[in-house]
Image 1 (cartoon, rainbow, N blue to C red):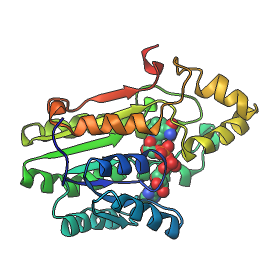
Image 2 (image 1 turned 180 degrees about the horizontal axis):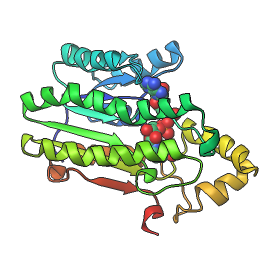
Image 3 (image 1 turned 180 degrees about the vertical axis):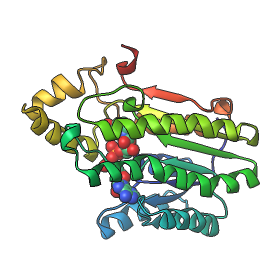
Image 4 (image 1 turned 135 degrees about the horizontal axis):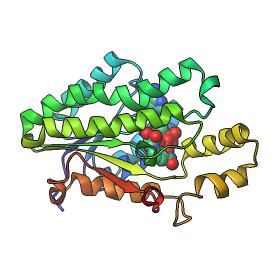
Length: 261
Ligand code: NAD
């Protein structure tokens, strides 16, 4: 694996769950980190300091992924303060579960903005910087729902299918620039996002939360195990390595067999 030490990574939605674990795993390898996302200011500052204890620089930027100008500022601040943007992980995401005819319009728009369009904005700002430096890695956090559907998740499934397609298109655009673009498609990872979904799905289907875990979430996950945030981080690290330089435009599943069935 190539040395990633000293490279600079921006990870959107990294104040919680998968993104926070990726930030820590990257810092352990000596990468400087820009964390982003919502949450309690003191908690975020504590996490930032924990990351800096690993001997790297860590900056927090509060860009809201629904605001293109704030996203531009996230990338330009990272470049100014760290000197480059070598790795971009588009991870911020939200979920909302509802039958389509009752789907709140503002929830649809928010899912599209955060789970899909924000990656267009981060990439259009970061790609020229990566090209200039002759190296880059872009990882888009898609989902098994980028490849297959479940009912009541029309916005999420549409956005995640969208990001898998966008990954392929942009990968071709920068294939000769030493910049790879890939999507990771996790099955269910037990994070705050999924905890919320267990409650919402129970309500939407009129079943208990235990039944949601057994009969809905892990029904399709053939290993019957939640994917862990650590496993997703290791995959992200591999996609950043030199060994992965010919992996581009791909979607890599980490879903306990879900999308094989
Ligand atoms: P999470 O809720 O734990 O974390 C989401 C992060 O996104 C948080 O840091 C939050 O503050 C941030 N965020 C939300 N709205 C934002 C906004 N407008 N601007 C900036 N940041 C914002 O969720 P997670 O489970 O860690 O999910 C991370 C990514 O992984 C998402 O894209 C999600 O769709 C994807 N994913 C999750 C699972 C799973 O089972 N948990 C499975 C497949 C894919």
